[in-house]
Length: 118
Image (tube, rainbow, N blue to C red; front, side, top):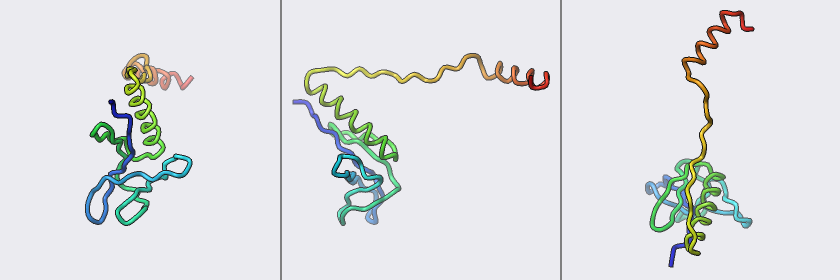
């Protein structure tokens, strides 16, 4: 049976050293920003970064709690799809297309400057 779970942790510096701590969620399943469960209880720690844990792998997702939660939900959907016999196709996000080159843009700017900015 395929693994369907993904969990959100934050890799943080505690007095005893660096450690993965579970992220804390509100009752409506939204992540509490920078709040983690430490051995002494819930604490808010700004340093460190969020990680997803699934299939015995750690995937760093940055220090933004909103983006970390979005990626957690996305990964849970992917794992559920694979567990139910589907496939996940990775698409590349399109980068903004720039026409021309930096040299041509610079030359156009210089020409505009020479022409008096008109």
